Length: 473
Image (cartoon, rainbow, N blue to C red; front, side):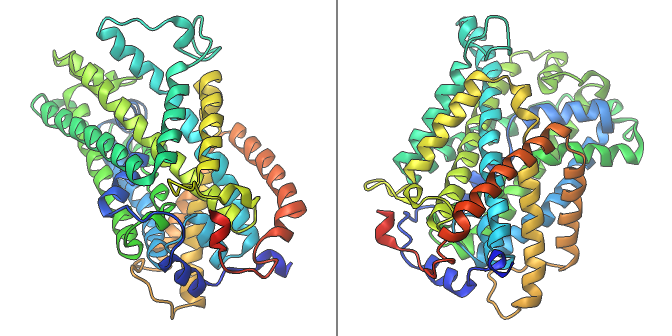
């Protein structure tokens, strides 16, 4: 039993992180923040704001985002403490390894691998509708066979745009972290600029009568809505996986976590107030509620602008979660829990190119040949589990190692970690049976690998605590 709970030494991790890890340190606070924003703000800003208003909260959907943001912030503050204290690739996997032990680290790392991969596939699938709509508006038709996966539309053979996008993002990340981060920065800036314009323009068409009654579903509706939109206010965890590529991780990672969530939350609240103020919340139960609001205002051309922002949003979400999956994979293989063949860096680009290439091909196949409904129902449990691990680890470490230097300290411990764990546990319990089935099957496979391979092959098991840099070349 004791070998399952063997832990990494935090001071050793800190010394290694301060040295040459083999990865290029090029990411500043804003590049890290944009990775977080890329993971948080996706198509949901144009969908959930209206759909939740129509079905759960009414105009008070803005408060639903505030409640969800407070719950998500509890986990974000815990992530910020760890990011400043243990600036090592792997995020929740590494934090769990240092505090709770190897077995818990394996469980969360193994689950995050499939979770991040499925998120990439889901958002890649979602791009087709927006690209098709944009091209149609420009007079360019997309062949039916290339517009969707089998079962996802009439005559669909492959979701071609989703396939190409997954492969493009993987190739870009292999090429180098600076180049890929610059591309992601451009996509996030474009997305934020368009969202800001939409909010500013829509504010001129707000009718106060549409905001009354503000609580048509009561206070309970606000909290029900918060549970639904919670999935739109996480994604900042992806930026912590790039800790070893940050120029000053102990300073910048905590700032980036908090900044990305704060900026995203402000935009979600403002978008909610504008959309529900433009039209009655009863009219917003559609796949494109923001576009409907502007069509009612006599501005149908805004739908094209929304498509551009949605495409930029999808690309940045793809970037964030593929980066996260590749870095978790890299960290697990570097620790010996997976074959160390995967952690070798590209000789020229200094990136973990092998897991990135495999992820690119795997997500392209899933996104290209499976309809979105078959994939979307499988996501979320891994990220919520990671939240619980991180929050619990902060609480435990405050008692066991209060002497450790912390660049950022989570306030109100244990209240904040308990809030983060409780909200995550409630959401996990509400996930559909298909998600739990996938979780059980995936974890069963993972446990077989751990007990037959990883338990004896890890660096801790072999007494090799340091990272062998020459083996990463």
